[in-house]
Amino acid sequence: MALKKVGILTGGGDCSGLNAVIRAVTRAAVIRHGAEVVGFENGFEGLVFDRTTRLSTGNTKDILTLGGTILGTTNKGNPFAYRERDADGNIVETDRSAEAVATFRRHGLDCLFVVGGEGTLELGYKFTPLGVPVIGIPKTIDNDLHKTDYTFGYQTAVEVACEALDRLQTTGRSHQRVMILEVMGRNAGWIALEAGIGGGAHIILIPEIPYRIENVIRKIQLRAKGGSPFSIIMVAEGALEEGGGAVVAESGTGRLQGVEKLGGVGFYLAERIKQHIDLEVRTTVLGHIQRGGTPCAFDRVLGTRLGSRAVEAAAAGDFGVMVALDTPDVVLVPLKDLAGKVRTVPVDHQLIRTAESIGINMGRESM
Image (tube, rainbow, N blue to C red):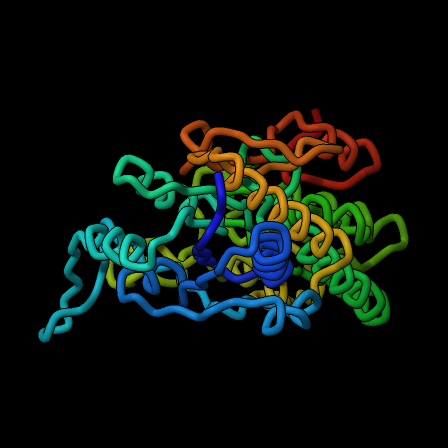
């Protein structure tokens, strides 16, 4: 089909590589098809309230190396259950999907490119029965989407976390301390696992493997007896102690996002360790540093490939799909097969076996 006008939005948490996708979609649509490109601001909120930015090869030419997203994003703009506070401060939900569809039609768009993680892609898929041709582009630093080998943003986050571990290694060794680095990973521990291995962590704790504090303490004590009175611990924010739950910083009931805000597991773990050993324990929370900044080369290239392939799919009339990396190719997979699903780390994954084979403690008895 002949593309005349397309739209794009970025939803969920920001990450490095988003602007590479926006640039690729814009350039491919304009250069190959002579199409107009409309960017919706702040995710689905831009679609609901008709807030747009005209994108061109001119205003996207210098954004390849820029972190974040020039369109803005949000993780609380679900059009099917839009949450806002009433005059009394209570949270109310309304279905505003009809307004979003009306905006799409008013602009006369041939396709909507939805860039995001599992939640954003699930929302995008919900628009397909309403007559909106959607193509998903996978984004998440957590690398937890099915049907794609990698999501852009992940490799940059791993590089940032790995560099942080490198720095904690030197200060931990100098002061003979136990150094804890808390990274993102609500349900999936890919960042903690890969960055932990790459950064030489001695203990890695991820959501998929509930840890026993006795195993963590034993590893620290063994290192001290062996002449290394310092230890480096990498922990994902969703990691939980055996028999307990994730450490919650804020309940989801009072948040417009509607989900719990995790955070604090690093400090919780530090207090648990202090009860058992007489070593100084320090915690560093990497937080949104993992999301910001210049994307690495891998994410720039992957974002560009995904954006370009998405435009090809739109021109061919392939909708209701997501572009995905099936190494070495970029392929199309049905959105219905993956929307809303999270790819966690299998407990017998080769990365875990690799970690344990070289002496990294995963908080469990080595298998």
